[in-house]
Length: 209
Ligand code: VGL
Ligand code: ZN
Image (cartoon, rainbow, N blue to C red; front, top):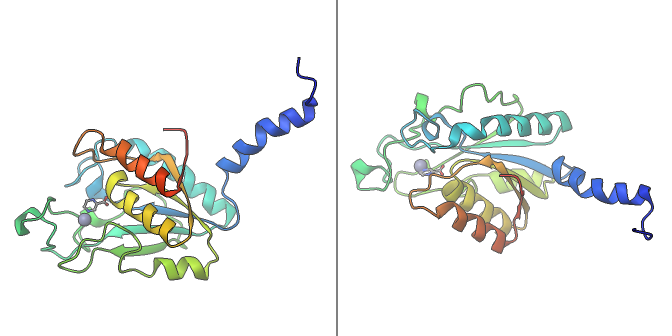
């Protein structure tokens, strides 16, 4: 028998952490990383489980929209012969060439019109896995008084990982929306390693997967 807690405080204790963890708070922004057709099944650099996260991503968009909190969507936006492509001796198939159908956001994501789009990877000879690299994301977050980024999207161990580490380094808190991310897993274990790096750097990782 637990004599120390009234049923009322026990109930509050049980509910409070869940509620505060689940719902977006003032100072939060949603960052959707590279939710583009080329990274989804049928695309040129498809994340195998990419389609599984779509309902979760949509639910988060709706929560942030209803709360009136900022939503950012980054996109990989490469020139036609970007140095990361196989044809140029790079590690990746041709993907997310600016203005092509594969670079478009996933169908029926239903991004609110107020979504702030962040294009990256536009320089011919530089990689930009992080949504902060060569963009005005940090400046925009500060303008909007954002303190914590809630991060979803693709791919977990490349653009999500690098965006999360950059956000932490710049002093933002980060919550990884685990059910709304998926990994390319070029090597088995890449996803777990990425999660560990984010945890070590101070990111909060949602327990649901
Ligand atoms: C990405 C590989 C190449 C990503 C972008 O969005 O994670 N991965 N370019
Ligand atoms: Zn790329």
